[in-house]
Length: 211
Image (cartoon, rainbow, N blue to C red; front, side, top):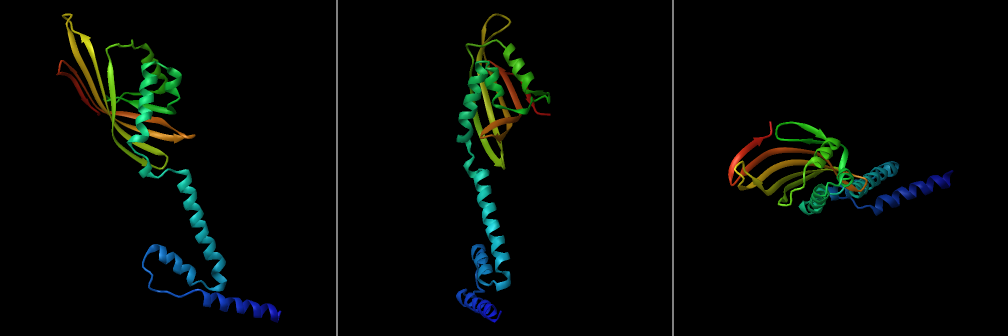
């Protein structure tokens, strides 16, 4: 018993001598070090366990959740390009694979639709050989596993007027889209049209702001 007690006291003395004392540390990182440096023998195990737990949680979070600064316009540009292709081809399976199961779409008038209704309505639209369109990503922010994209859609085509003459038609809309990172890929969870403008030969025919 005496030998064990002597060894324990010797360990404490060596531990205290080997850990420098510093009460003038300024940064947060230095503060963490000082907490380890000023440990008493009876509290060593508990405090180091808490520190290691914090480190493990930080590493786990960094691995599982992408940093917001890594999510940018370039992240979603190829995704919107792919969405454009499957919609132009009326590829129902391809479209549904890019939408979240609980997807919701809301137009400028406040009408809400789900994925099945949207795909069904799209399949009924005739293909327009004169149609050209571009999607411009204006802003991207991220929080956890969700990304919020503000995008501008511009479509141009040729329409026949009531007198049979050709007119240049243009549709411009601005939407707020919510994407969710699931099973290793981004799925469109919600899209809300904030503004829509339709013109013929440069003359405004319809202009709506989200209600």
